[in-house]
Amino acid sequence: MHPPTKTYSQTHNRVNSRLQFWTSCLSDYEKMSGSETIPFLILVFLEASMAIFYHGENTRIVDLTFTLNTSTIYWPGNPEYNFTILNRQEVGNYWYEDNYFSTAEHGGTHLDAPAHFYKGAWRTHEIPVERLIGSGVIIDVTPKATVDHDYRVQISDLQTWESKYGNIPQGAIVLMNSGWTKRYPDKSLVFNSENTTDPETFHFPAFHQDAVKWLIRHRNISIVGVDTPSLDFGQTKNYPVHQLVGANNIIGLENVAYLHKVPEHGAIIFAGVAKLYDGSGGPARVIAIYTTDSSNYSTLITIGIITVVLSLLIFRFCRL
Image (tube, rainbow, N blue to C red):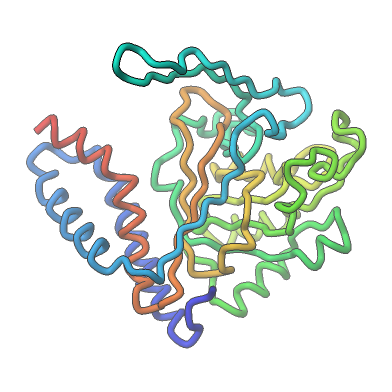
């Protein structure tokens, strides 16, 4: 599952440089005039062509998202998921479907905007798109969380990861894997409590605030995420991790699924979310892409970035 370690460091540096280049392009793209976008379009076309040419059988794409449905688990106090069929029938000589659905922002696999716990921070529609893409850093604490259901990721866990793979890269998406995926969708197992309406009875792992402070002070990350219901552990009283990430405009991901299918290093993570005006978060589609062949690893960022920028490019091109 892991790229060969002897070539990883060098290849990872190339990919991270390309990631920073493309995210810089994304942040500057809307500032371009019509004539300036033409070279950018050409560059994207060439990069896309190379990615398609080199995209081989060794590339893996993993969906890290629980399906949004009537089994979706929400934090107590949130309304449950609703799905209503409006049309699902033959109409003349064709088939037609459309539906109505409603959901709270914070349920299932979802994103926390920084404003969720910090006044004046980014709301969902204000999150820069380049913050939704980054190098995956998977902190596997499954053995520890199996013994201690209230375990919190420590600075030492982050340093152990770095001793294996090098410094956590700029713009990284740091995700805790505690093995909690196997508990879904049983609400009593996910909250680890028989009383699933009372947060004071919950027991599940998350990040320690000291580890998050360390990431903020020493590593320029974009996202912190967990495979449990909250960035703060079940027995928290005042949600210090939520407050920290919000104050520093760091995005949160909760209930991230199937992290055991992704290597601890070497993946690119994408966190898609609807651009909900004034939102404090929203349901997310989280995807990981990696390759088992380090010779193709440098094409991963291109493959993913193209998906994100296509709509921007088409919109701008139509205005030329």
